[in-house]
Length: 100
Length: 422
Image (cartoon, each protein chain N blue to C red):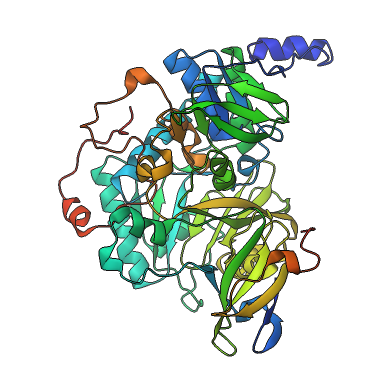
């Protein structure tokens, strides 16, 4: 079970949270103007990386708020969490990211 | 060497010292007519049928680890074809028919055991859904039948059908032809069969890049054992498909989630069939060695860790203990996770992905163990079988059904059951 640090409430066990998928996938501002390929890109295409992954979590059984985390998809180690709406942290500035 | 009672007796007299290697370990040639990435059950089946059905002998299967060491060695060995949608029915029924004679075909005991797959209904909704499955399957000529709780108990005596259960059993759908097989033996049998047909199985050879020419066509793959040229590539990399396809510059509508399973200490035969419960997410069977083989749920987050959280397995074991009170004192020996690909949209649509348009010679596939045989015989890149552009039917059956209203309406008028690729 992951130990996830909610930016609002602190470190809590994974069962308090709900996973929200890849972060920073912005909904197109005007979906009606998109063609099928562009809409499919938004709906279905995900990076699914083997490595560091920015993802959304919701502290469902806590504050109820969405936030983002950067987790390594091989070790499952979460190196940083940050509030929704904040920019994705520059990976180069986070210590310890060279090792999973 | 053909396996038979005679060869067994002959080897027994010699102290089993002379069994030959079942497949070669060749060095990669500079070029092949086609290369399959991934030597799991699916990749090896693909190579076998390419060689046997389509006469392609100058082909290779490239594997980063050892053959059958990925999800083929991590599944819960269940084989069934009781799916709802026509495309799924077609591919899995095709596979079940192959499974029925696979041991003879490969001269390799894959231990296919049609002991019955029983899916439990715990709610009124389950009852309606499973009855719909039963009717749809029978219309397609696939065996599936509805059992009352008492009949389910009769078929599987350890099952608890007490009305006071947290999730009481209201009935079950039973596919008698469903069952289990020895997952490793499937990979080994196909590997041996493909090897005898001249297929090179190259293990410990990780692909590090996919090279494409100026027009976008594949020219070969970079590996840890050097460059190998090929005009055709099949990718059967399960949870790693996104990673491999990224090497070709193609994004995939996929996410990889851990799916956990566990086995108990071996006990005497107690479990006569496969029992699955989708509602409380647990499935269980007993291997011929005596272990209870238990499938758990998917973890909530994407991961390549091949492990998962303990609360997921605990949740499944809660369900198993209530369904089978006799097994409460059985100890679990091992648990593990496989990396399951989850499709965000139908696989058949991948051909229309922007990046894959120039990759006409690229074929993708995946299926669970039960589909290894079926899809393996359908995944191919043979020009002679390419259909006219006006034929818009999917080349591969859609693993995720198209749930448009149009399709629901069509359910009444059924076509003959036939995999669209065969």
